[in-house]
Length: 314
Image (spheres, one colour):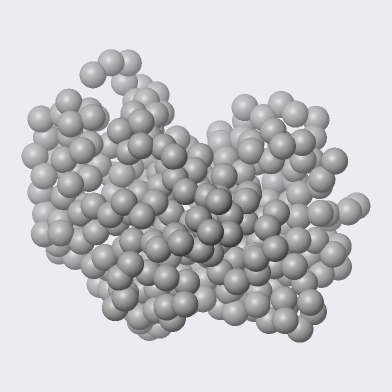
């Protein structure tokens, strides 16, 4: 039975990874300090092969017994979170990644780091390929997240090259689905909460900036395929279907049957104007591509949000 540590395992993506790997027959150790994660995301797990440890990975990590895999997903990921916790965000990307890599070296584990499309910044190349170095403002407000992830990639590759470790880097593009927080602050949670409660939908700028939205089950499948592959360079995992924020707002109004209006606020500093993954590498080497249609994914996410908001019917 493979034994796997997931840091940030009580978060949105981490908890889905816990479910997926338990179903694959892994013993899973979930580690989280619950800064942005929640025990509610893992309370349904009753398996004897599951352990939860409350711990901040910026402090030394040690786990008794063998570890076959370590997946480092600990980090605030929403702009409202990393703007509220700028220093913890930088620390978990640097000290936390260093600690997790040190444990992987000691245990001879396969190591996978959750990176992000934000390493591309406000891109000058479109769509974004893995060989693009990015356009990031290191001293802007978003730099705490962007540079934390860029550093985590750099130290992961250093451990791969110097210590000959088997490491993986997944660059995650916009993902949505059940277990996103109601107050997450990103487009889909914001729009769903506003539409379901009869409030105006808040778009930033003129709504023309683009994003590419991947349903969580597709993303988790892609991550697993990368984990068991022989690829050590970064790989984009995301949905290449690009749409404007305005179009997403309209899709959610349609899905929720809401009559809410769309209002507009100034675009935040350094907010990317476009975002679209080139997934040729994932298709070629992982035989992976998204399967869940937007309408299907939005429906499942909407049902989760209705439950969280105590809404029984529309």
